[in-house]
Image 1 (cartoon, rainbow, N blue to C red):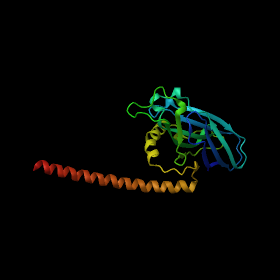
Image 2: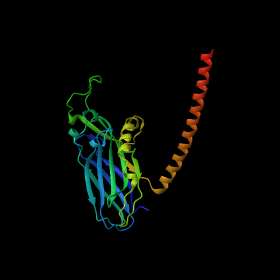
Image 3: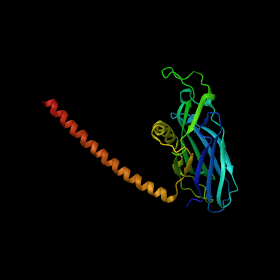
Image 4: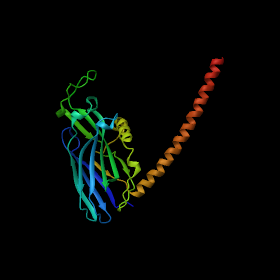
Length: 239
């Protein structure tokens, strides 16, 4: 059982100029007294091709944590554009907000971020180079977060969750999918995000199982169609 449950995260100052700080209002509940502080981290994914361009925008300790509902604003500096590949400054990327206890990550929230040039430019030649960062507008897709929770030991046993180790590829894949998310998502504009409770997670897992079964059926159907097409192709060739 998790001793800390994040119930809500609100993205503040959104949309905003690229150079403005990133701000998140976080509400969480602490169920039992904690001996140590919570570590919050904000990471900006600079490129989907390599994690070497990831930037830790802020890393803070919050505590001591009283039992009950707590709220605070997590503010992080904007990313350093000089450390981002020039072709990746504009377009869709990802910002990650994570929380750890005793160096054990138990929550990660990923947001898609879209950086657009505010002035019109020729699409064939692209925006003027070097980019004028003051003319870039950052929009965070606040109501479409990707939430991942990890089971950790809250006691003194020194272990970590193995699932946390292999996240770079997932973050890059998330960025690759971001453009479609920005195209198809219907945002409500209020910047609010209600995180999942245990019951919601069970429902999602059940729905995911159903989706997997439907996907398997679709794949079998596709294979049948391919076989039919091959048969038709053979018949046509024979004729």
